[in-house]
Length: 160
Image (cartoon, rainbow, N blue to C red; front, side):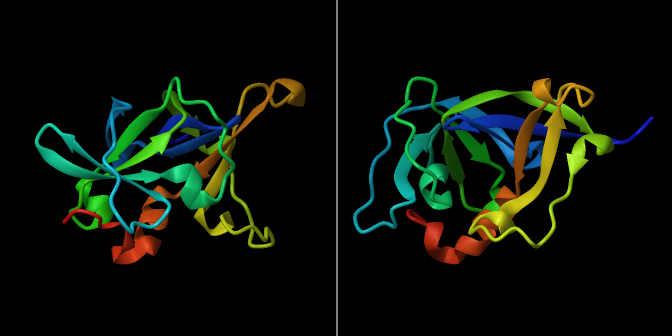
């Protein structure tokens, strides 16, 4: 049997994305976020999550994606502290669908010829569905959220 890996499937706008399950600590309902003065646009603010101050990053803004206007199902994916050098960070997504187990044959690595500002943050494309009939096949963009956070450096640390 082929090896598989678990990912969290989430949505930004109409597109589906995934991140490694091992970097997600928990998923919480959207709650009021306290904005920080003079923070970068992608830093939505901070929340008090069970006594811990957690920086909240708007992933859509960070990746330069347009606002979908949908806020009904928004969630915060709280990342493991190790992802951000011990800091508490959560990312805002439009919706979280499920944890899915993907096989190696469902993963399509992308090459360096893609010239997009976020291409360096894409681990792979995940193909879900019936490959025989491409009409029913869905594509999920597998983001390297760890790299996204690492590339921010110390800029994400709003309330330390």
